[in-house]
Image (cartoon, rainbow, N blue to C red; front, side, top):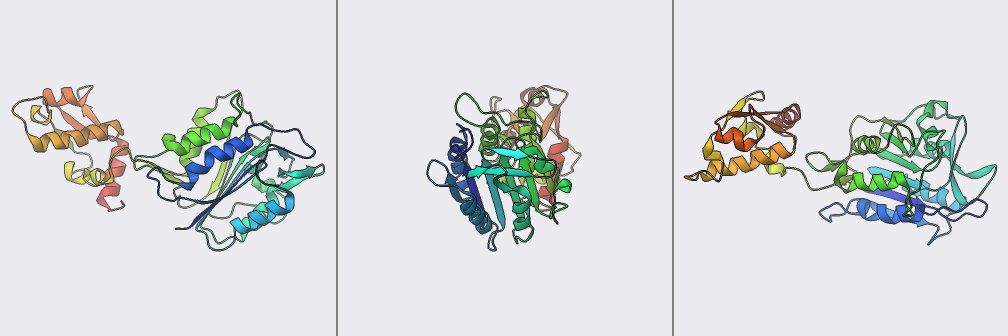
Length: 318
């Protein structure tokens, strides 16, 4: 699978006040998107920052066209900088931007996206008033709805500004990096745009800046692969350890390594059960901890999440 990402961060402008965190945000985001946690290649990234490039309207338009040109299965656009919203559109500022043409409108970007052959397109906007991007039916032109496979994640609502931290980072992008670094990973280590929004939504309070999200997808591709909570080989054993999805597994002291005499097979299974427990796939019945369930000859069972992964394992989906 070919994955492209264009990462844009602009701190310095010809006619607008400077920002402090946008270039830093791109520099922090780049290694997380370029490589998975196991250091295998992830996205083929192109970086455009005001610290190293002249990011004007003409050059950025060309970069966006190249991003969404044929050849990529997944295409991701990330922008950190000044933004300006209106009732019907959102504009991301370029270095040469000035009123009334601040830079590039989202509606023009979506016109390019509409013709893209990429299976999944992700647009992430860390700029003031970016939440106007979630009101796509209000946008002008022919772009009246999301094309299939498109997701738009914005740092704030259309009436809000996007905060920067004292450390010279965008608040939204700081949390975004945390999500990609494993905070939003599922049991198998997959980070998707939907998981990222869930993580971000919990990171912001009810009174201040709130991220927004709009999507039209029938499947989600990985934006990053982190270490799984449970090794995949052990997840595949769920139907073996629990022959029935709703079944109970009776434990006894032979599962606990501290009990004598030792039972290596049961102890190895118990180690797997403990990892299932840590991943919220399993719970003891009638005891607070698996140790006590084993020592008191009680049972354990799959949680609703565990039953989902049991079913996926049964179907051979991983």
